[in-house]
Image (cartoon, rainbow, N blue to C red; front, side, top):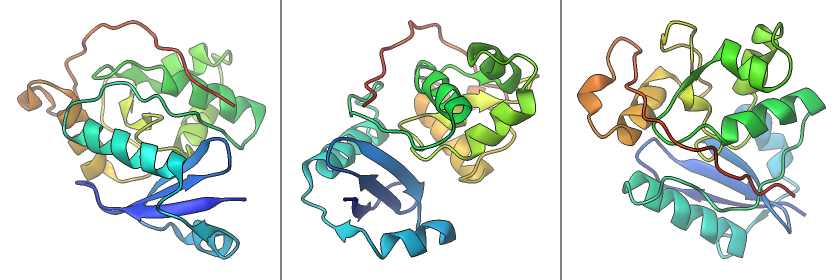
Amino acid sequence: MNYYAIIKSPVDDLLLVADDFALTGVYFGTPKYISAAMKGWTLDPRNPLLQQAQKELQEYFAEKRKVFSLPLRFTGTDFQKRVWQEIAVIPYAETISYSELAIRAGAPDAIRAAGTATGRNPISIIVPCHRVMGKNGDMCGFGGGLDRKRFLLSLENSNPATVQGGQLARQRGSRRQLSLI
């Protein structure tokens, strides 16, 4: 069974989706392709996973959380799952290129496919696809729109003035563990 809740955030309403064991989606607004599926879902803002997701997202937007601890479940191809797993471990306030993402996902020649998988990331923000940039650090491609991408990158950067022309000052950090079910 799928449960959902809609919460307010600085980047618009967020649609949170969970099954009985893990968070399965964080979407900006209510995407058209999700509307039909929602008919079989249960609106349940008291669902413990959805409440935890809301709490952790609020802490993220308040700049009090850099790492999410929610259990996640991805639905997609094996390649998409590898890409999303690699995106999930990009440290806070750090970015990588699509070509680096393809390498990390084990398919160095599949840069476009890695970009396509990034665009289909079902768990935005928590699986931070906004941290994936063009080869030269250019701000490009984001399912939530470039304004949201700029906002999220600025939020994560201690000096928002350094996010200019698609460049993000990078901070080094260790790769975190991802809780997948």
